[in-house]
Length: 113
Length: 111
Image: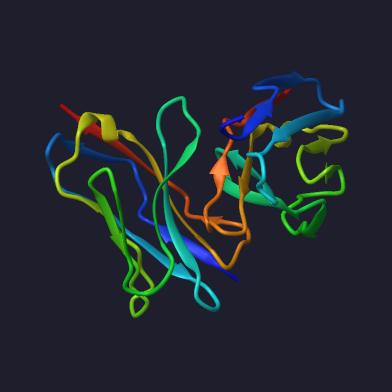
C-alpha cells in the first residue's frame, strides 16, 4: 500500500487478556518502529527493527511486551496480561535507509477495562 | 541521553498572527531535527526537517532553523490560518534510529 497501515484501529480488552497489534510498513522500508502515545507520558519509543532483528528494545516497559517482525515486513506487538496503564495509542512507523524520515501509521487505540 | 524540551501549550492565536513554538534539545553527536504535526483525528505527519547545523527546513509556510550554538529548532510561521490548528511535536534522531519527542504543543487558531 501507499502508507503504513495498522490493525485493528481500535481494541477494547479486559484486564489480564493478551492483545496483538499489527503493523504493515511501507513496501521496501527496512526499518520499523513502535511508539506509544498516552496522555500522561506523551510519545514514547518502544522498539526498533532493522530487517527482522531488533537492535533496540530499550523502550519496552515490561516483559509483558514483546514484538516480532517476519520477512522484513509485517510486525506484531504483543501485550500479555494487559493492565489499565497499557491503555494508549500504539503507533508504528517505517523508514528506508536512504531517507532519514519516519512515516507513521494511523495507530491502534487500545483501551484496557 | 537525548532529550527534547518543547514550549508548553496550549497556544491560542488569532488568524494571521505570527507563530513561534520553541524547541531546544540535548543530544550526543549530530542529530537530525524534525517537526511533526498531528491534525485533529489524524496520524502524525512530518512537517519539516533539518539534518545539519544551519539548515532551514520549510513546508506549508512553516520554517525552522537548526541552531547548533543554541541547540534549538524553533518553529515559526508568519501568518497562521485556522487550518493550522493541531498538535505540534519537536523531535530528534541520531542516525536511522528512534525519534525522541518533545511533549507536544497544542495550537488553536481563532478566526
